[in-house]
Length: 250
Image 1 (cartoon, rainbow, N blue to C red):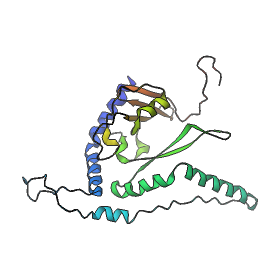
Image 2 (cartoon, rainbow, N blue to C red):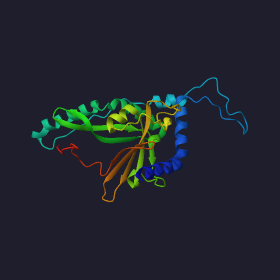
Image 3 (cartoon, rainbow, N blue to C red):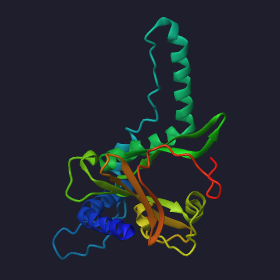
Image 4 (tube, rainbow, N blue to C red):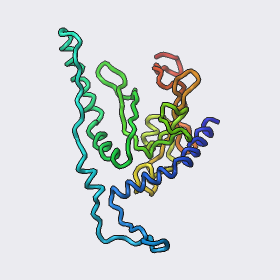
């Protein structure tokens, strides 16, 4: 029942936002250098192409791309804490390097002028292990076309009861993270990978991740691929301890 509920939500969202997604694709085509000519009058041949493209849009956007990332600055409230503030600054710089901030910033610098904005998904990845620590912060860039918002809500994510993210992934990744065999599944939305990815990749999948506010004020997360459920977590932001299913030991 829950899978059917989320699939219906996805269908309604796609139906509502289809015109905007089409505009996003057209903007990407213009950035990449569209060759098609608009018909001068109605009824003209729309398949005619120009022999030369001066991509003014590409040039204007690329001329404004900046690779600089604001560096963290921590100011100590007391003089004796200045050394601690410096330690925190260094830690934040290390985190920026670990999370490939340069690559994400490079993508955002181009996506924002083309589409008007991007989204940042901040998560806690428990699979990352370090010296004396379990888990680490994970930040990824979400293209606006990967978002399936609740229909009828235009005031922002904070006012939505649920939202869905379309995530391009691979079969091997799904099996490793969720332990679910998806070898027989096929990619449902190849166009989520890029504007010109219309061919299905045998190893690729489109994973859907739904976030929903529950009655207690927390956030539930539900994930699936096609008709296969991957994850159903209530209050997914709550810290959990992994336990053995046989003996119950942590």
